[in-house]
Image 1 (cartoon, rainbow, N blue to C red):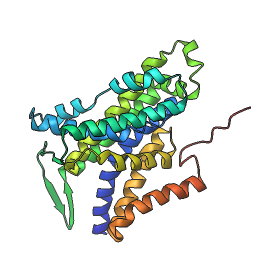
Image 2: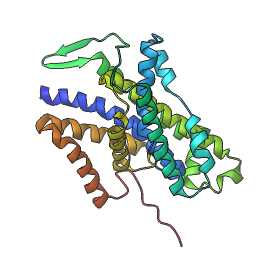
Image 3: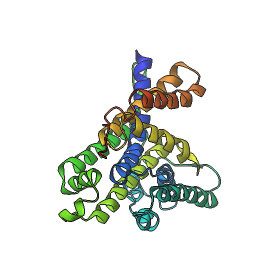
Image 4: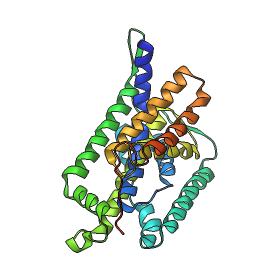
Length: 286
């Protein structure tokens, strides 16, 4: 039981990071029905921002978190001009943005980097179970960010506008909703969550490299699909499910099976429930 509890803590830590990244995917898809394939690389950029600010500016944890929550530059420069273009144009642009971020980071920092500790590391041992202050920080901070996002989407005017745009983007401008501002806000929130996840990942697994966002981004996308792409609470659930699956597979089987099981989970779910756990089918009238 102690071993299972230890692995459950590890699953919560990894699942929290997946869930934060998955929220960025699901928010952009919910608003624009577009998969932002560059989102995994934004997560990587967040980790490198954390490294730069911690090493060169000697910033503590809180300012570093604030600086990693960046906004809408990429959306304004790359996605906004293509908003009324065919959807394939936005997908190709997203792939291009991801490649640009990877290679730009690679040019600046071709070797893996180690993020120094930004908080005092303390470990408590209860029986045979070890709980670190970093684990508690990652889990609690991730849950707080998720709850804040859920509150914003469900209880504020901006959140109501987001839900209205996701329902019918062509009608809401007639009701006075500033569509461009709301879309930019959505990208800002998604990017901020990805940057925060990159920072926490860099602290928890302190070796970072320019290609770290590829596989993590795909797994976060799986989390969003498992929970129901476009559904915020579904993305949270999907992230924790995938984190639990990966940790438990590595705990009881060879770690090489981890990715195989994760992608098999997506394959099976798409057959049994194509719209995800909390997703709903959207029939179109002809």
